[in-house]
Length: 54
Image 1 (cartoon, one colour):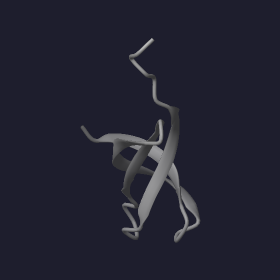
Image 2 (cartoon, helix red, strand yellow):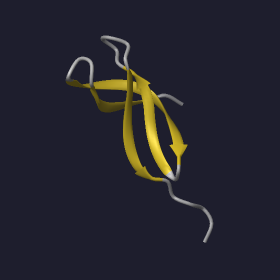
Image 3 (cartoon, rainbow, N blue to C red):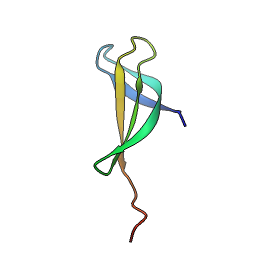
């Protein structure tokens, strides 16, 4: 499921909206995608993942 997120492109030095997918690493959720202008990989840290266990 691809959603739109706002992130910072290091190569363009601009904040841009990108479409990405959510992945989880070390209990942190992160949106990963590519910059629509230059094609560089972009990431956006979303916060801690909620654990279903007590």
